[in-house]
Amino acid sequence: SDDDASWKKHFEGVDMVIEAVFEDLDLKHKVIQEIEEVLPEHAIFASNTSALPIRDLAKASKRPQNLVGMHYFSPVPQMPLLEIITHEGTDPAVAAAAVDVGTRQGKTCVVVKDVPGFYVNRCLGPFLIETSALIKDGVGLEQMDKLMIKWGMPVGPITLADEVGVDVAGHVATFLSGADLGVRMEGGDLSLMQSFIENEWLGKKTGKGFFLHGKGKKAKKTVNPDALKLIEPMVTDKKLADDEVQMRLMGRFINEAIFCLQDGVIDDAVSGDIAAIFGIGFAPFRGGPFRFVDNYGVQNYADLMNKYADQYGEQFRPPQLLMDMAAQGKTFH
Image (cartoon, rainbow, N blue to C red; front, side):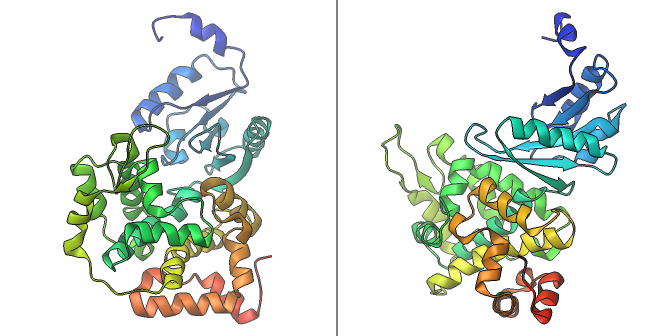
């Protein structure tokens, strides 16, 4: 504990500290300042965060060049991806050391830019928003899950929300809606998740979310009838084709991945493919978002997204990078 001075002896000779306290900026600032008082000058301070800007964390540091973000994905023992996040002042040697440590831990490391959501969660935000849009367009909860599993995802978006927690999914979507993505986070309805949170339908952890979750490993989940009652008044059944449901959802994720490449959030398409597969289980046999676009056809994909943009809104408009590549006949790989 803080009252026991013996902890300081253990930190006086370390080369790196990885902090994983609650996602609260003031708390992390306090930990950084207390730990740095006893750390040697060369020691690296790494913060495990899924959302807080690393540049804001660095403001509390006496040695901001030694501070780096290391975003471990939950559950940590099972998830192979580790995002290494550098702020503008991070020493390249510090980033290299973080990659080295992560690799020794058995993780696949991808270095990403310090932007809201970093890479994987940044792509997940529009995907979650589109989930709510498809619910309002009449796509059934179980139907949506089945279609996305058929497309190659390990779980559907409805089960994903229940598994990670409706409150956590809602927080990610709300946070990114207020960040720098602009129109790319439009087209859905965050009030749906907010209603679930107010009713304490948080998913598996409370036994009730979009689904009802029984106790025990063998317990089957069933659709929550109260959720259906809440959803019903806002639904207009557009009788969407299966492939349109799939491509509207995945298009929002893939578009944001391409924006990340365009904006330098990731270094290259290979990193983006690896991070998507190891971070959220993006259909591995499709090779990741960039390999998928190559195989689908860059021009074909750009045309489809422009069609959706004309039909549903500018949130589908593809990045300029994609349009330029289509015009030049280029591919990502």
